[in-house]
Image (cartoon, rainbow, N blue to C red; front, side, top):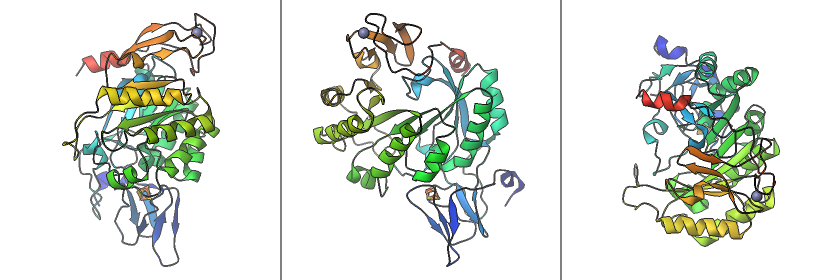
Length: 367
Ligand code: SF4
Ligand SMILES: [Zn+2]
């Protein structure tokens, strides 16, 4: 193993040594069993070295950027804020439609632990410093699945919290109960993908025990006081049936009620190994939104269709648009200082105050 990668090793949490000498990871529902020295689990970044289990990319990033929080998407959490966004490599799912597959499906090399692509040093201290220096009040763990770099995310989140920053996790929610409960102490907001039914997870993402595990993770986050939003990427022929949307809506209504957990319905575009499937017809997404709202949900958004009126937040009481958006931009704000509808006074479920932190804009103009 070269010296460069040694500084990226951190003893992992959530694993056991079994009686037969194998190591079992307990972080996500895959619960990989690793017998051979120098080999990673399925996510490709958590590795066995002798009798210990390690995260092998601690403090290493495949890229960081300043993004508007709306891009995550998080529409009800510190609107307008800048999210200092960090990604690494690896994922515990194998979605054949992944938009970020170059980093999510990258794996460290067994035995040598070499990185498959260039990773830059970014310690938790440096991440917090850069976030502050760039005027971001949120750090977002995003781009690839942050669950697989749990220890790096957790340490950064703890430090961010101590420094008055907020933490947001953009995740597939495919994680076991105890680890998500521990993480939830330091995370303020999460956007969780709810991809489809059992058939979808097993055939397109190679994931057993889903969506149950994902739904349970969302429940734990909300029970723990984390602000949660859900994203469903609608793929034609796979998760675009009325029955699926009704089931999701009824579960959200039953567990969280009509306003607590906003839902984003996102348009699919052909990508990675799923290039033969056409983009989702906008009509299909509109129909899904109608179904969710018929079941009682109040905040249902349409994503990846710039300029669509379902990018706006409508007051559940008087029906007027109270936050207008165009893509990631907030173009109109009709809430009072305590986040009530300016027209009728109804309390809108928005966490934090609106603050246009546009340092992300200057950042993107540099490139
Ligand atoms: S986090 Fe990675 S190593 Fe652990 S069980 Fe999940 S896929 Fe396997
Ligand atoms: Zn109103």
